[in-house]
Length: 116
Length: 111
Image 1 (cartoon, rainbow over the protein chains, first blue to last red):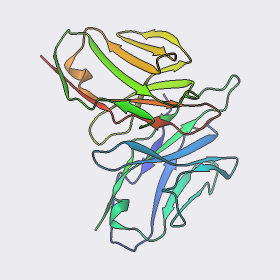
Image 2 (cartoon, rainbow over the protein chains, first blue to last red):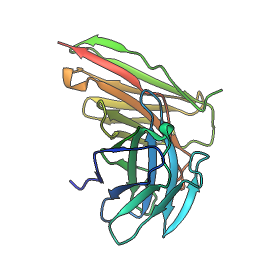
Image 3 (cartoon, helix red, strand yellow):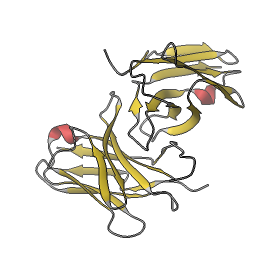
Image 4 (cartoon, each protein chain N blue to C red):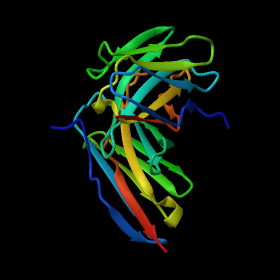
C-alpha cells in the first residue's frame, strides 16, 4: 500500500540554523499539508499546498517558514532560522483530488526536529 | 470554547472490553470526521472516515457522528493490547481544508 514518506526521521539543529524537512507524498495525491505536534500537545495545522501554491496557512506559518515542491515527487518545509520553540514532530500529509472529493488525509511518519 | 474537545484520558481497560472514545466540537460547519490512531512518536494513522451524520463500521471499529449534538464517537469492540495507543479525532469543513484535531485520548488495553 502506498505511503507518505518523510526524511530525516530525526533532525537536531542549533538555534538560528536553517532546516529543510522533506516529504514524498503518495504519488497520485495532489493536495499536501504540513502539521506539527509539540510534545504532549495537539496536532496543529501549518500550511496546505495545491497546484504549486499555498492554499491556506496558519498563524504559526510566519515568514520563517516556506514550502516548495521542487520536483514531481518531493514536498519540502524550510525553516529559515530555527528557534527553540520550533522543536516538535513535523508531519506531512497528502490527499487525492477525486470526484466526489475525499477528505481523507494520509500522514507520514514524521520528522522529529530538536532545536538546541 | 475550544473548537474540538477530547478527554485526554488515560483510559485503561481489560482485554476484550468495549471502548468508547468521544469528541465534541463547536463549529457547525464541520462535515468530515476522522479518527486516527497514533503510537508514541509516530505519525497519525487513519482509522475511520465519516461524512456528515450516521454510523460507519469497519471490523471491530464503529464511528458515529451526531451533528445535531456536535458529538462524535469511536467504539472499539473486543479490544486488544495492540489497540493501546493515542486516538485522535479530527474534522474539517471540506474543500480540502485543514484538519482540526482533538487533544487525543490515551488508551491502554491490558491483558
